[in-house]
Length: 447
Image (tube, rainbow, N blue to C red; front, side, top):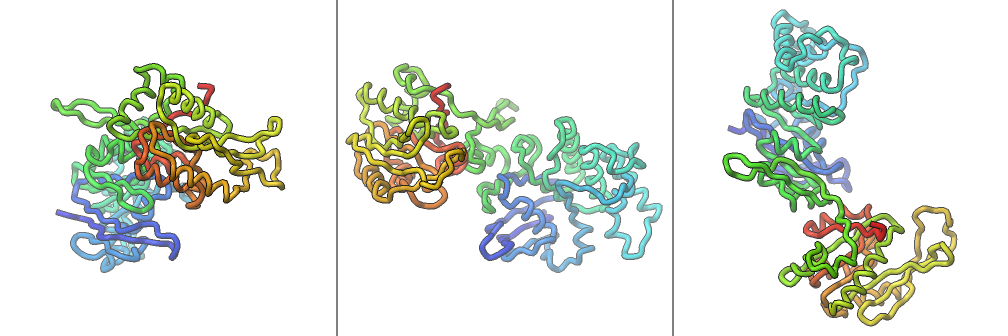
């Protein structure tokens, strides 16, 4: 039996800002559905559409077999409760008064709470373990206790579905566990929950199903064991992840998701047959291998690539691609060069803007279109080789569809054996969303 269904929902706040794209889902009695995804992915907007606070531009929400549009606001509130992420009341209502507000859909405009309503409020407070705090001001209890008060308000509302926007945000570990355990116990009593969250580990522990939203699109939908995989999480969040497994009934069960830090390996480790870098080259005999060299400006990413190119050549490997070394006047970087590793030809790719303040942390550059075209031609015409180096793919390529587009296309097409691409830290999530299988290496020559 389906209690709530979204059919091909799309929503936009304006014509140029579509937030949700063709989102569909189903919710059953006693189910806990998690909505996961990066900031700005549409999670809160989806909850508001499901609650009837926003009207989708296309598609519809079906509640108990009927379109949500046919329900009045009061009728909707008898079915669906929405608990926001942050709630700060204007007045110091008592805990009991806050929970009593959940009875509003049942009282009418001029109705007053009856003894039955007070009994429902007390029962709700007992269910979440807050009965002893019933007379305390809501503003004077902890964040975890406030979240439980809002859950109790939903219980007093006697709705069948609770939508919760990041219910464990800003809570310590103990209160996170307390809130989620109570939610889990309530699902066993038939109450249904849809929770937006930034915590894949909570979804692994509690969710029946998970929706991964990325840019308003449903990337994956299903049980957590199927959706919360390393490649999928790396793609959605733009970070390398590792799923840690435990055992249950002699079967591996995912227990936790942790981010992987960039590998701290040096180019010199290429001479060690058992090193991770050497193993990458060994695996490239069967499948192309991509290394993303990342780090802040000035840590030595170009030097890292240059050292790798030299060592690879000394081992008899063919090296192609481009390096982009800095051009300096004293200690000040005034330009960016470009060197073709296949022919050793070079050009000046960019120079510092004449009006640029020398004190700026992030200087801006004027690129020579002829040098850029030359670099693109070199990337297009060079042979495949054992090692392809592209230093670097940055804002021009990822954000403006300009720059070394031949390099971008070559990586997308997999025309390499081992590719080593420099990507600054701020753009690493975009690179990993594009190439989730890549290895991430710290480009610091100080490691």
